[in-house]
Length: 334
Ligand code: FO1
Image 1 (cartoon, rainbow, N blue to C red):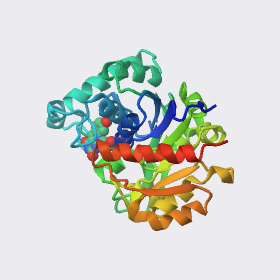
Image 2: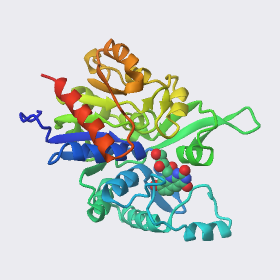
Image 3: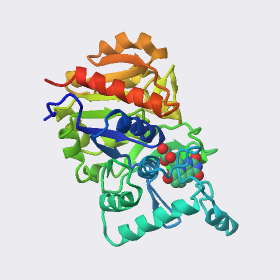
Image 4: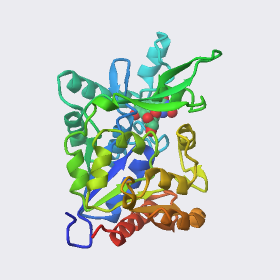
């Protein structure tokens, strides 16, 4: 049950990569002393050159642990790509996915531990012991579940599924996506601590991560959406769409693929209101440029406020997180 004190002690966030990680940095600053748990998306994960790469888990770990390349938003700062160049010199594929030399250290440790039989949750805990991200980082599942995208076969009339990373990195999401599928979802179950982190939270927050391939992926793990429907904690989200455009990345291509308009109100409707019994939102923050969407979102049974949502620095991100926590408090489930 939520704690009685006004300041939330246990905050759980469902996060994807870059946008989610940056928002959590503000969340930590907005709630000093709170225990923050991040449930990380693992649908982006991929085997590359025999190494297991977990982009969204690593982006959260590096961003909060101080090792992220701020310029790229993924991988390590002060990075070199000597191994990548050597692989390219041998003509090894895929050449379109760049592993940095420092980053390879993380993937070697992870791959060795996975091969030794440790579950991804234990591996993530071990890696975080070095980075001290200041949050508990839980993979959405320990099972293998990877996002694939159904695209047209080049100069043919067939269709084929490619790994999300190939669609996202090699083709910059420019190939029309007919479907986005989490392969392995049916056999996945919530990772250790995930259900408890949602149902034992004082507040659950959906950062401005990609609603399809980050938050949407987490919701596809059987049992996680049900936990959000059950939790006594208020669930508030932050719109990743500002002024009809994604703040970063290609969320518009993903939303189009699932038939959702690229607007702040449409994403709120896509998540749905908890008061309807089938949605997951109690509250939704939209950007000041989308203030005319507030009425439409409230008509869905979701409390809504407009605030500046550009995470240009820690100060603005902390203000966003503070607004999200305040919206949650005003909508705490009695
Ligand atoms: N994104 C790119 O655009 N190009 C890359 O070569 C690339 C390599 C890469 C390596 C490790 C890693 O953790 C992330 C990497 N990313 C790269 C980003 C990645 O595709 C995205 O961060 C997520 O999968 C989407 O959020």
